[in-house]
Length: 282
Ligand code: NAP
Image (cartoon, rainbow, N blue to C red; front, side):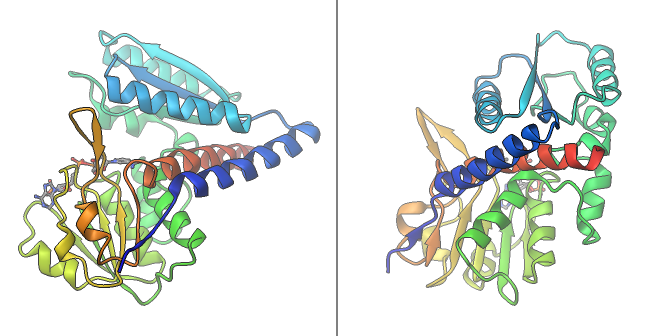
């Protein structure tokens, strides 16, 4: 068996096209374009790539992106002041702070200060709590992007056994909440979990979000399972996922590539969250 590749780039481009049309239509109706403030502190190369991708997507769909490229020497007080200003600026619909922030900035505190109404990344405790209670408002872009991707591929979630390998606050946990909300029975694995291999093997849907290259072995994948690889690991000049793709594809029914799988869905979801933020504020 060779799995069908899930083309995240294509699905994301379709979403972006729809958003572009909707934003253009709203513009015709006299509604200003949505605006997203993108804050990058320091010059981490990976963060710079991610931020540039997000800015390019903004341009593509007609979202105004406001650039805040700040030096690594930016202080906590300066950053908090900027967040406060953006929270109070009615011309700004969404605020994104690119993670990780350089030391000694307190990232959790900064993310908590973003108004939940402008939290288009879906990282604020209020938004994560609402998702956990099945009353989502802003949903974390990567997990929500995975759900959109599964829907686009008409892959059934309800009633399936799913495993999420990884349990971080911004990726693994909201991914488990999303799958639960969609009707899956979810097992969540983390660094203390024993026998991850068995848990993966018993699952119809496998989501990997660990940050360890090819940690999820291809032989662990049950025949016909759906494999979603969120991991992005730089190994030399290559990007490698958390799943051993070359072997996993022989067992899976559907599988995402890295790159070109979940990454573009994250960006497209950020764009739709920003439009939603504007709609909510009007
Ligand atoms: P993170 O904050 O470092 O969290 C990693 C998670 O994996 C933690 O829950 C950790 O467990 C768990 N873990 C670590 N080692 C493990 C092991 N040996 N067995 C089982 N679980 C283990 O990372 P993250 O922010 O969630 O990101 C995960 C990956 O996704 C990274 O490669 C990141 O680059 C990628 N990512 C991709 C996108 C995208 O758009 N495609 C977006 C965001 C992130 P504990 O909780 O017990 O420490």
